[in-house]
Image (cartoon, rainbow, N blue to C red):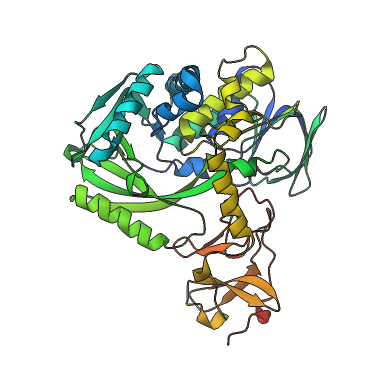
Length: 503
């Protein structure tokens, strides 16, 4: 039966530390990078703001695939045939690296081989699917066009790529963490990094005052927590919902499926017991803070129930991704002047293969043994691709601008706290200042600043998860203002609840 992997606790960093490489972030990119660096003989410390493998990487649907929805035909047009081939090769090698490392560490992470599919149900899009299959095949994947799948409904067309994989990400990542610790790696949880001074060496300051000195620093916090590279102008945050249900093994569609139709629908299964599988369905993507999350969950559940009528729903959750405005993740030197700082971000929903790829690429850049041929493809300092795909960049900036000035999401505002129901939240103007006000189930009010501590955008309330979310760059906060997800590193300021009028 599939279970949540229990993590051994790592203590917070309480004293100064000196290492070869400091990795900020304990998800798939951070732990993969740290493990590869330890394997290359470097001393490494991993600094995680919360718990290892418990953030975005802990909530992934865990598909290990080089087939990333409709990417290869676009890459062929924007980066050329060679760019598409390099992307495919780097992602394919990342999939195989997980298989290899899982075998070396002898970890039971429920690793299974399965074909991956990108499908459409609209016959008008059949030509686009055929073009994607041709491009993926030309990029070196074992890809084919088909109209036959294991899904319990007809498709108009699909790209099929053989021999991809799926696994339990926490079991794998926690095995990496255990091996890191056994080989001398230092792991620290509840250690939020708040400052970075670049130099020779670099210095990282933490929320509790401890300082880490490192020759090299890797920022692998999903969304970079430092803005010096202005990467926030090139990343769009996106949340997706997920539901899990137990189904009879005979209902397993035998593969990993995704479509960009209907705000995305992704379907796969995982081991559960001898007679049943765990169905995982994701989709309904939306901008953080956009609202209507309960309705989105209902639509996703209705899709699953319609096509898998014997499903017994057992879990639901949400995860967050960052889409790069020019399609390809940003992995490499942090900014044009960087000499000892590196970043891994913008995986666009494909962080499992992307994070493993990042670990290998960053290790080679730091150690200097070999520069992979795809280093330039992922280089965050690239500007030509941003210019080439300028419409996406400009759309993102226009959206951020609207959110920043507050001309958005009127449903998140209320005239007074009296309008907020138990369990709800809204922005209430008090004395000329906007406050984010939440009413607990027992009627107790909590008030915090409505301005995100990252760059000052107005937050909005997510009623389903009871969180405050920034639609500009995706920071998320608990109702008491505590940071749940960056790029923000400081909590929302608490407001005196006595300043919140009931009438």
